[in-house]
Image (cartoon, rainbow, N blue to C red):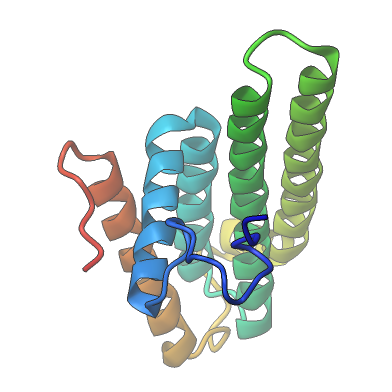
Length: 176
């Protein structure tokens, strides 16, 4: 009997398993690029994430609030990526219409909906006071944000914009 390559240490190395860390990052980048290019909802969530980060920098939200926003944004994007993975796997395993395939896809989409609703709630909690202050007094409260975390938020924005721009352009994304 042939050894199972996923469990047997002496078995042959599967073609999808990488021996090098950089190659693993390249595979991950390829998956992110595929999802962003092919999934409309991921592009919508990505665009909203950029707007939220720009608003957070403009309103000078505090570090802890920014951390909560970043984790929440990551949660929504991860949920959408898992939804894409489930859809592709279900399509591969069940190319014909099936109630079980539909249920799997619907449940995965429901997970994204739950995370997106939680993200909206977090956004309301984080932005309510700074936004009402901005609208009432014509600007953010002084001293609300340190230059260090605004710089970090700005760097995240630049990275997201660069990755998104390269992914959505016609040129392939080179991660190496």
